[in-house]
Amino acid sequence: MNLEFLTVSLLVVASPGTGAAVTIATGLSRGARMAAVAALGCTLGIVPHMLAAVTGLAALLHASSLAFETVKYAGVAYLLHIAWTTWREQGVLRIDPDGTDRSDWQVIRHAVLVNLLNPKLSMFFLAFLPQFISPDDAAPTASMLQLSAIFMAMTLGVFALYGAFAARMRDRVLGSPTAMTWLRRGFAATFVALGAKLALTAR
Image (cartoon, rainbow, N blue to C red; front, side, top):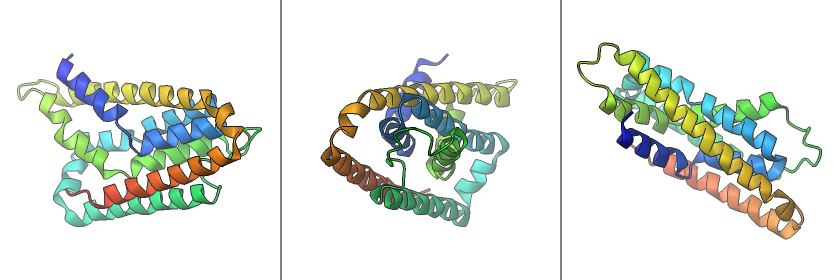
């Protein structure tokens, strides 16, 4: 396996982004198990981008300004929605002491949407992965699927670690209403910043 691919992929996965923010917030508000569920949802949200790259839809997204802008601003709108509900204590940092307010499916669905509406992932699969597919590869699709699976495994592992660490801090944070207020505001601001960053993303 190409060491450069593993290194760059790990840097991409570990860098702060919407998926990491959602997983950390879930760990803080609902504990380690639900954070792992959110990490799984973020990982599953990669699948459509992978399939788009394999089937050539990512190339269409890259070539079509209208398609790219539509997906991009849908993602921006969703991030702003998360920021607003988080600020109003109804989003990813809403505290549910018994942990039963949101089902596993609801957490997964939310996490999938976060990554699904992120055209930067399609750009990653379109521009980055093909560089590691040899022109004379007898089975390029299989090779791309293999590299994609490794990227997804990294995503699941790193995000689960983020969520577990956040869950370890959960009791300290929940014990301080002031800390919770500022943490909620901080995450809301983070989602606004990520939305602004996505809005400025060019093809």
